[in-house]
Image (cartoon, rainbow, N blue to C red; front, side):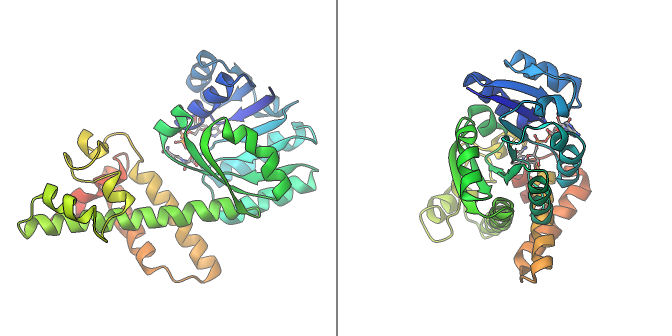
Length: 293
Ligand code: NAD
């Protein structure tokens, strides 16, 4: 088993670090939150006093931080000066493609190897060790990161060169945001046309309107498998995080001149939902903003 530095022990990172400790790794865990450190200690990690201390002597350094600016800062100020040259740096945060590429280049300049490895699956999957990882980096870097990621997930997929993991993540979530809104609209319209939600579900879930948003995460309560809609849209994947991912997708589209009108509309709809104070609700709660009298 290996020594792993884990930086960022929030909703996602807390469960991921706990799973590495459960698998027998010596996890040196750091977060700026004392509460998060306490939880990591209770889960079998060794809390340390700084990100540098977490990286020092580690075979793998894993970051799970809010955004690109945090990752870039932690790498520059703490990880680069402390991680041994043989360490693999694995950033699992969702960040912009350009920053992921920049970080990998900076790591190379320091004689280190980095991969971007964002995840699909929310807090429940992080706790259960069933995340999907999409990995950007060289073949050799992917193989070095793989055993650590397998200890936290059910699928580990090599997406391509550095930045490709983040590209896959934001493209996937652009589909998710758009299909969720389309599914919400369809249920609202169906109901106004006199169709019972259950009847519409039974038909569309086995017809060409089917999607993950409908059959795994139905935005209408009492229909389909249990989902956040059955709990007043509490828990699940926060609308504010969906908005973050859609913004990243639209920035990337702008950079490479891709045409993404539906993605842009989805961002606009989530922007309004979050601005109305609903950013903490699950993203399927957007159905409430689409209902008109
Ligand atoms: P979170 O805010 O719960 O956790 C982030 C943690 O980072 C916090 O505990 C914070 O104290 C810590 N932190 C911030 N700056 C730090 C620093 N300089 N040094 C050390 N620790 C620092 O966020 P989360 O929900 O765990 O999400 C983490 C990442 O995973 C984000 O990029 C998010 O977009 C992505 N993600 C989240 C979900 C989800 O369902 N929550 C799903 C997929 C991907």
